[in-house]
Length: 111
Image (cartoon, rainbow, N blue to C red):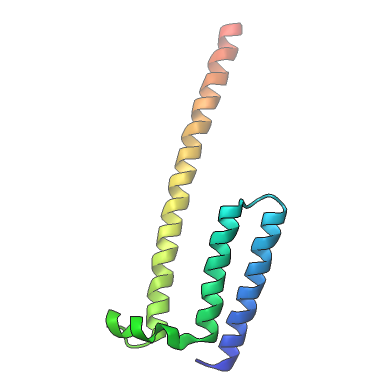
């Protein structure tokens, strides 16, 4: 892998570690969430610095290059993240509808 890409990946990983820590300090992340994101960004940094770590997985998975594995993994992660976000949004929408309905019926009964 090109040295410039490795340096960019390393710096991005460090920034995301810092940003995750900032969110924890602002009480936006719990300790479990901070631990999860530190693990994710730590693995990202390791793969950026030592891309040869992926070689056994590439061979077993039948991929031609490590980049192919990373791209496919990225797409799978994005699809799963979008689906998860959609389900959370639908759940929040249903809860909001229930609350609005309850408020509307209670106000109409008062009149």
